[in-house]
Image (tube, protein in one colour):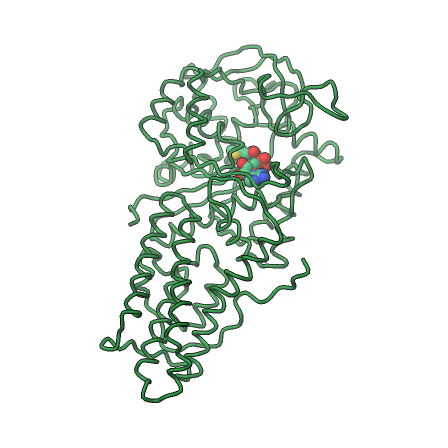
Length: 521
Ligand code: ME8
């Protein structure tokens, strides 16, 4: 059951050096499904996404393109990142940019507080910096380059050379928080999920933490350090703060108290920033740590992380143009266990589209609506209590189970398990129609009562399915809801009580929810 707490969920804010690929879309969709599910469970829900626009990576890209970094960011946000949200049907509540004034002034406020409280000091640092990661690397995170990078050290993630930097910077005394972090991971085993991510984080912190360089002075594209404007704030320190500046940190205490803490959904590449640095920053500021950090797996191409810099990125619209946004959302959340790596293939996408969406769910919906239209003139038969058989009861039981099990899975962030739980109802209803054979019952008026009971049971099951699948398949379930003649919107229904939804009395024609796509792709 929903616990009545508010639910605040975030995605990473993405770098605007390039356009999005399906890896970014995957994170967006996962967070969106969780947000929609909690919202439909009646929780006070808020979902945030946005863009990370400062730092050397953006500065260099903009310079190479002959524009200012702000011009570059404005263009990418307008032409690529905001349109992505429409392409994959994201219902976010807010979109934050790190160049927003509401963000910049409160980054300064946060930093000033840490400085005043003695958490920041001046130091010198020499190390290898990867501009792709926007991070100093230890030698164990580097490898010898090959080909054009022969003789240079390259970053293991980007396979591009790192740069040896020597700077006088401001440092955050992060080392002081190692024990408190370990106590946190211990007391709240779900703080970092999945288990593999938690283990990685714990063993990393157990080795002891270094202090963190949090300013840069060799370029000026960033938030100015409030007490020294010859430095800008390190891009990660700036970016992590988006999660609180977006909900009123420093300006709207009531809103901040209402929303914080957040559940963060990130890719496992940026787990340490979220599960180590970020909670340490919050502890230093005397704020509550996040509700949790979930590090999902990578989408792989040829066994490697799909990426813009390696030119293996697939644009989300390449998939949605053929299969639609619902199928995109469904595929990535169903085919990949949330938390594990997964590979995308057009063949697998097409096969699941046809078997599960078109034949499994879409066809079920069309058949039931068509039979009520044909045998009952579109009038939904009232369920006749006395005529309920064991098969009817079994369907009702699966409806209850799917409702409860999917919510419990969502509460544990196990999105793939939630969808699987709902799919038991798809399968049960298909099995029910096959075994009860309403088309055969319709041939003999003596079976009228049984025919009506079967169609009423199937209709009710379809209503439950529409509600339970609405976070994943918002477009198809809205069409189905209309065809069922049900009141209000499907999104307005309580998902944790889906099997109790009030339905309608008259169906209307339903076009194919998942039309056939040409197999050529
Ligand atoms: O790291 N598979 O931004 P970013 C799955 N600005 N997810 C993937 C992926 C893949 N192959 N590739 C990218 C940054 N992602 C920082 C974040 S947050 C305060 C700052 C997703 O544009 C995944 O969510 O490099 C990953 O964590 C994120 O994109 C990295 O996006």
